[in-house]
Length: 69
Image (cartoon, rainbow, N blue to C red):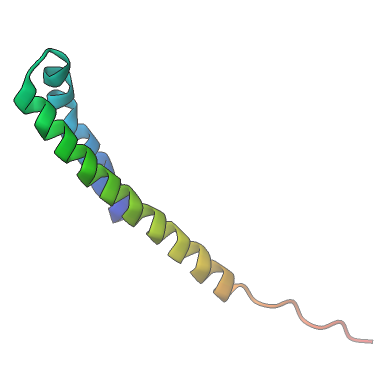
C-alpha cells in the first residue's frame, strides 16, 4: 500500500530532527512539529484507505447459495 510506505518515509525523515530537538535545537523542534502534523495527516489517509479496502472486501464477498431441498 503506497500510503503506508509514504507514512514510513515521513517517520524516517523526522528521526534526525527529533534527535537534534532533544539536544536543544529549537529549529529542529519546529521541523519536528511540522513533520508530526504531516505524519498525522498521512496516518489519516492510511486509515481511510484501510476502511475502503475493508468495504470493498465486504462488497465483493459472494453470498452463500440458498439451500436446496
